[in-house]
Image (tube, rainbow, N blue to C red; front, side):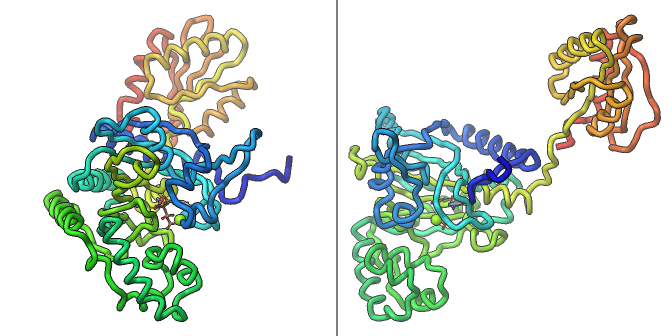
Length: 436
Ligand code: ATP
Ligand code: MG
């Protein structure tokens, strides 16, 4: 067993880190709920064909990042690399698309990539998808919702919004031809990846990280010059709504998606704080996907956030978020009868003071050794049951430290069992809940 370790790029999230995840999840769930979005929970494994058909053959994901395997019946299955495909599949399968739907989901995604800071092989996304509305007010709703989320997470200063319109599939085809024509004349100056993409997925060249390629693109045809009228009008409306809502944005005319079903609005929230893995949230309109998957045309727009990257931001810039206290109260008991009395009393306390963390000592030992554990636990109060407490139906309440965290003087008193809850209520009345 000694040399069995977690798979590369698939991380354990340990107790020191889970408070950040819980804070993120709780905030997201509350904010999305307040906009009328409903949560869906979808399988982690789908038919490989779903991703081939929706994401497309010539993308990084399908070409080289999927965890695919044959199950025992020889059917090819894949650990989901993203959530939109499964969400659309589920919405189609269960007939959810006859009306406007606002949906969200959260969970692990899997991509075979080179692990580094902010890039794992198992990572987590929160995805938000809206179906049935073709107009740009829905795009604006999603972006405004993101902005509120960043504020509530305390990271609004760390992220910047970039938007663009990639037009209709037809206008993009015209642009694509012009771009390929231009780049073919400078093939030798392109980086290797871009050369490979020149004929398979040339739009992806626009987000090449290579400086020479980027320089070459300065003189290349620009997507905005190829936009159809409707895309132009919708983009203008989106910009107007964002201004009205006070959400600052930068138009990045090279922001694209490699996937054919995307159209019109694309957006990303990026940060300078995470090095190369700067995109914490990416989204856009995909009016073509439902039809591409065999349904009738249903307009849609959505985005996905990378939870690991958001947690990194929360740790660096966000609200200081101390781990929940390991214990407010530590209960010790010496002897069988005392253990019985302690167990029942502590259960009653949990009914009456559910906001307090009460750790019951387990595993026996002398009162002295149990008190050492109590001290180490960080609890402010120890409750002690010994022989005398059992016979007099009372409990010893010992203050281990002040609310400030300083060590307390030897303040200790015996209280009748029936007064225990009231005593502790008074003891913790001074805002024990603001430790978080
Ligand atoms: P990147 O350019 O960083 O590879 P992407 O375009 O592949 O991102 P999307 O498919 O748009 O990413 O996924 C949405 C978000 O999910 C990303 O913006 C990022 O925050 C997060 N994400 C994507 N891949 C990973 C990964 N391997 N590890 C951690 N987070 C990821
Ligand atoms: Mg990627």
